Amino acid sequence: MSQKPKHLSLVMASLVILYLLAFLLSSAESKTYWSDVAALKELKNSVDAKSMRPGSCLSTWDFSVDPCDSVFSDTFTCGLRCVSGRVTELSFDQAGYSGSLSSFSFNLPYLHTLDLSGNYFSGPLPDSLSNLTHLTRLALSANSFSGSIPDSLGSLSLLEELLLDGNRLDGSVPVSFNGLSNLKRLEIQVNNISGEFPDLSSLKNLYFLDASDNRISGRIPSSLPESLVQISMRNNLIHGTIPQSFKLFNSLQVIDLTHNKLSGSIPSFIFTHQSLQQLTLSFTSLDSPYYSPLSLPSELISIDLSNNRIQGVLPLFLGLLPKLSALSLENNNFFGMIPTQYVWKTVSSGSDFAGFQRLLLGGNFLFGVVPGPLMALKPGSTNLQLAGNCFSWCPATLFFCQGQEQRSPTECRKFSRLIP
Image (cartoon, rainbow, N blue to C red; front, side):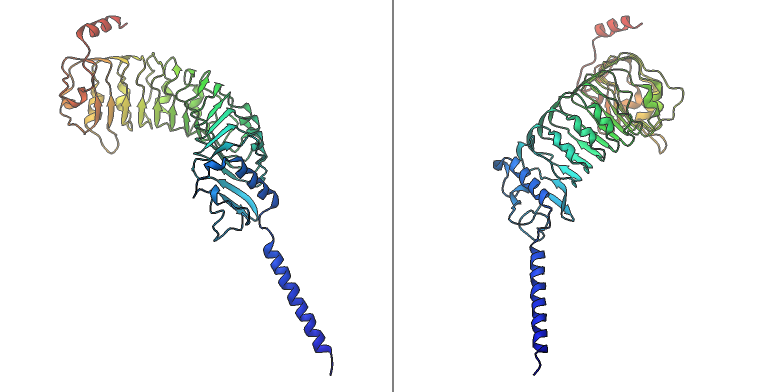
């Protein structure tokens, strides 16, 4: 009897065994690149173990299993995302993690998103963040990071969002930020950042800038990109006037410079800007009247010039801006009577002409009688405030006269003598 069939069956059995071994070995092989695993371990070790509460993302990080192969597992249930075995996203939950990342190497070259917002991480921002060369979003908001912003962050040329707000950062905004050519959103508000704002004119994609609640000084930066939609720099030490360059910002919708040290007049182009919808310049020490625009096309919906020292009669043109529905001029030195344009814009509106939903004129030196159409308004119909002026009759029984008594005749006469 031939031995050939027996020999063939042995060969086939050997091949099956080799195939099974190869399958088992390939199944056991890690799906996460070894250096990414090492970086994740280093990151977890940088976090105070006492801050990893049960049920938090980091509490499920168990390196006895593969981080990127944790589907249907009780480990690595959240906090990271992988593509082809490389970690591409780290987004922690706001579980109150603490610790310092100052010595963390950030050896995660394929990371696109790093979001550690809403925790208690402290210490300086490490220069090693510049190792994340593929990063498009860096969100470290609402932590306790301190020290200066590393110049090296300016090398992250793919970065689109940089969120450092709500920390304890100091020093100046790095000039190197001008190298963030793809940046769209920059938030550094609520820190202790000081010094003058750098030239960011090369950031052609930047549309949102918030540097509020810092100690930034110098003039309002004129070297900002024309792509900006919102500029918020309230609560700083900025001085000067609104730059003429803002006229060229064709997409600008919001300017908020509240609580600064501005001077001079508001340029007339601001009121007829082709896209501006919200202008907030309260508490800015403005004391000069603004120039009336030559034409009235305007997109403005809200204007707040309250709590300054602006003197003069109420500008008639503000009552003619077609989309303006909120105007606050309270606590200035305006005098004279309420213009008819303001009255009719408060009591009536149409499809093509917005009425005043908010008109705050309290705390000025307006005199005469309160116009009859305003006297007929009922509480809740509009937010109207006329208290603290020089009207001949404005009792507290009227909702718009409540909150502050009318000025005394002596004070009103004294002011009238000071009017040039």
